[in-house]
Length: 203
Image (cartoon, rainbow, N blue to C red; front, side):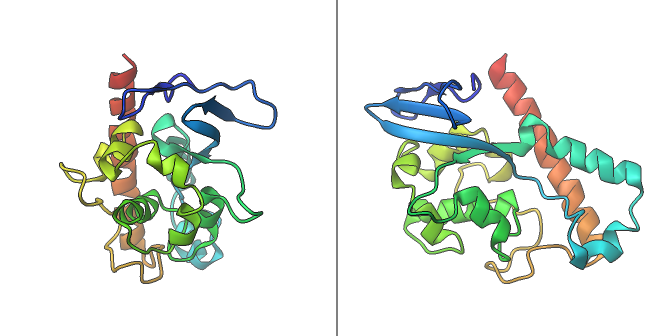
């Protein structure tokens, strides 16, 4: 809560509380009312039956290590936790959409396109939360607020993908051991870098 209770790009404090019933984090002010949920955004694909032939070949200690780092603060994100018109939340849509496969880099590309008014596999879902994205004013503002600089280029105009990107053409999961190892390495590098960035910000 304290990590994300900080000034928005316009200088107004985005003060969060964790005392509101049925809400993980909550904010209410002239900015609006927001119910936020914290979610892991680093899929290891351990439970994907389509990847069992790959995962089964990886030592248990390596699988556990990847899982554990995904649940550090660098592998977590805040998204609106309230459903709009009974439809999926952003985090729910991320997991169910086969073109996203729960991956943060692909989610972030959808957010980038949202700010540009472009379509994406999550376009309809993101559009249900206009007030939330308006808080950060731009994609760069969103990236800076959530300390995601290690997943974009220097001027926040492009996402650094964790797998080769082909305009959301499926599959969004690695299909070979080599592809999975590359995905795992890049993902760990990102989470480790974001953990350091968060620690530096906090200190």
